[in-house]
Picture 1 (tube, one colour):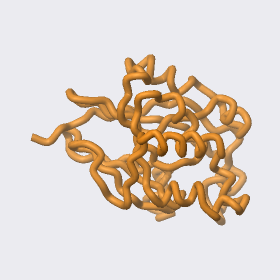
Picture 2: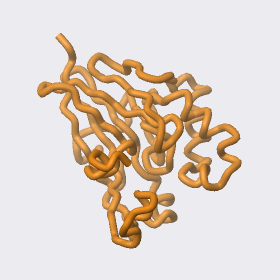
Picture 3: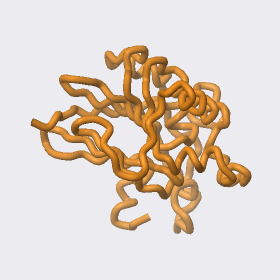
Picture 4: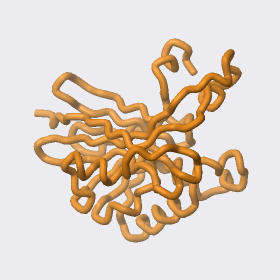
Length: 205
């Protein structure tokens, strides 16, 4: 029988002062406020617990003008997840919001697309507009984990565990990956930054 999971979003921060221009190109109402929250996700089955994304670095979130609701690891703790016991973390991409606390999971192996690491450590980072969403400390922390044997690279769609699969989709970042999760009600797709808002679907942007 396929392993099934329960899926939990944990909200740790929210956007402050964001407008529609931050999310939509050539929008008809670019100055209208539009919030964007920061989540990490917990997948829980009878056999294991998997964390998707790690949330913000506290100093980084303040520097970038986001409002902290709760430290991401406190979110996990309050939900009953001990970060020291987490063995599997899926990073949807390496921007500062999903990768800010990756250094705080001492026992975890991290799952990432090959294209994302190549982008974050290659010539794309010579261009300010492309490097802006990344933070070098976070990327360097992941490089150190590569050398300690704690990163698994995926090239496109690939299983992570029974009932959990990463889907290489790109777009928001070169190596963005979504996660497909088997649940008792059928498969659930966690699309990460491929779709921030419901209106992304009918508008196709």
